[in-house]
Image 1 (spheres, rainbow, N blue to C red):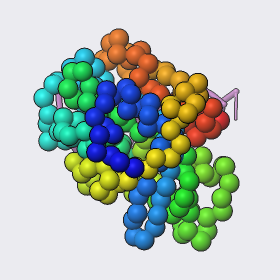
Image 2: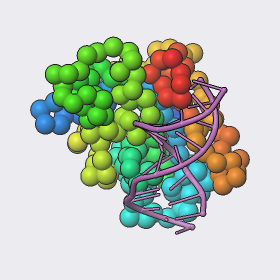
Image 3: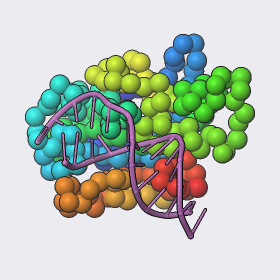
Length: 211
DNA sequence: CGTGTGATGTCT
DNA sequence: GACATCACACGG
């Protein structure tokens, strides 16, 4: 997939376009592949829920201000990582949080990374287990072995993006938008209600109890 | 099923 | 102290 200009578009357009695309990661000779089914947009000073809400970068958040296509990984609640892809917003900074994926390849290794099985040989497939692999931003980072060392790298370097099935182009009626997950209305104000979460609505792989 | 809580990095 | 999370314990 030609990534040269892919992320150089308004961030909400990029977010919708990412649905159905595929993330590919190779670690330790394992090939891990997953389809993006749920994303959220975070912008800048207009967006009280964004790490970039102060309008100036910090050491952690500078990928949100960097070149389109930069990977931004941060630690949440001290224990989990969240994967974001930088795309430009009207106010400058911005990133698309990848919230859930459908596992396509390497599920046995994902299950090991998620501590759902002790070894890949013990993995037995099936929806019960597979839905636990990537149905949340922290889970998918664990499954794909994504940590903050990837933050600041470019998409196409340590994490690949493949064409997959572009749902927004081919079946836009399958795309829905909702309020973003987990925001505190008291601290985020009106932005807590903005419909900046984009999902493949009929996918059983999205987070928050769907499917 | 639901609700509560503990783990704990980075920023305010 | 707040938080863009998750897993586990416990009660009905």
